[in-house]
Length: 217
Image (tube, rainbow, N blue to C red; front, side):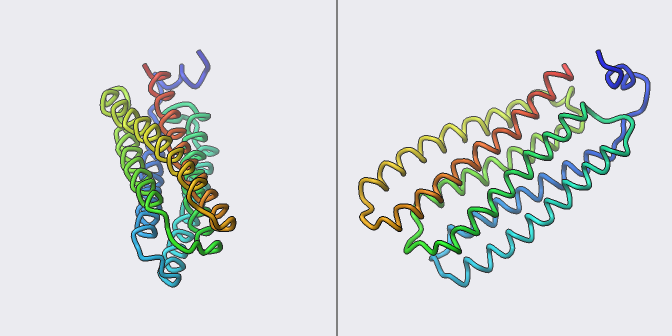
């Protein structure tokens, strides 16, 4: 057992981290909600650009939250759980928001002739997973007491990731079968790849949360 784990039994925990985690999770939900709105519109370029700008602002806020978490980590003697897990948790959330910004930027740059219906379906899954992440992080304020709720939320994200994989492979197969315009095929395939990766990255967040639970058991 390392010294940090021993000291946690005797020294009050630093409660400054949980509000940071809550803010980070809320920022992720906001990014996912905006992405969902992006695919719900009629492919109007001005609307897409406006929403992308909003997502970019959210991504910048996420960077600020991540930096705040790292600064807090550097100045805190005692932490609610292992320092490596705090770093990994915030880094994975940051990855998800970065990828949401990345796919929004590509849509504006690529200007696909139409938005595939599966884009919206996968964006809905990304948003749903972000809500489960927010719930699991909320329950982390007392991980031992809320183990069941956290595990359930994490398992839901895993189920969403499996569903997103299925949608992705079916959509790619259909795209290569039906799309005759090579440029449109490449554009849509790349967008699909990033959407699928976002859900994978959301599962990475919950994998870290489950690791925290195991260590605290």
